[in-house]
Amino acid sequence: MTTEFVERAAPDTVIVATGSSQPTFPRGYHGLGIRAEDVPGWDDARVMTSTQVLSEAVGPSGTTYEDPGDRVLVIDDGEHHWKGVGTAKFLAEEGRTVHFAQPGGDPGGELTGPTKAKLHRDLFGMENPVELHTFATVDRIDWPTVTLQTQGKAVELSDLDGIVLAGFHRSNDGLEAALSDVVSEVRVVGDAVAPRTIKEAIHEGERAAREL
Image 1 (cartoon, rainbow, N blue to C red):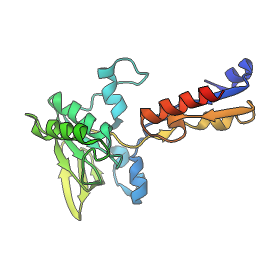
Image 2: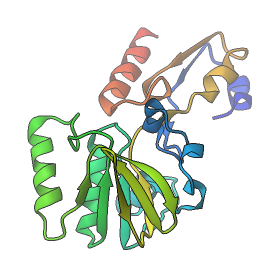
Image 3: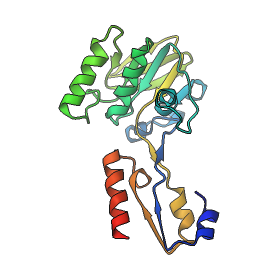
């Protein structure tokens, strides 16, 4: 979708549902006062997103598949939802060695009870269990070694093949501003407002359509 296309179509109203995308540095770290420049070696690491490593499993998604390798660090930056634990579980089930690091203490803490309980059983009870690092953030990188800071202690993870980001997204909100001088009414819904879950996206999209 471009402003040129909208100008040619000349609609009265545009509903912007452009979603969100994953950043190349843990977005949730910003709330902890950690920026990419605060982590020596971050730019030298092999970093990819959960969308990239899962794209081959879910079929064509417009995202280029990335193989994270055999030894992987999955980072949940504080979202504590299905994405982090689900990605770690998927990669471990493929036989990879998976480390899972998050700044909180409860993996998938935002999930409901039965869903979370099953994921915990799968994560830590499988033949190839995920190694959990709670209250942990990336402190520095000397690739392929990553040093985590966890409650004042340094934990080194060596010989990693890839880092997979599986946390907060950022809104794709550029189109809203670009259309402000083109269309009389612009409505923004779903993750384009703020990254959340599919429930909010469906609700806001339906409500916007009904109101029109």
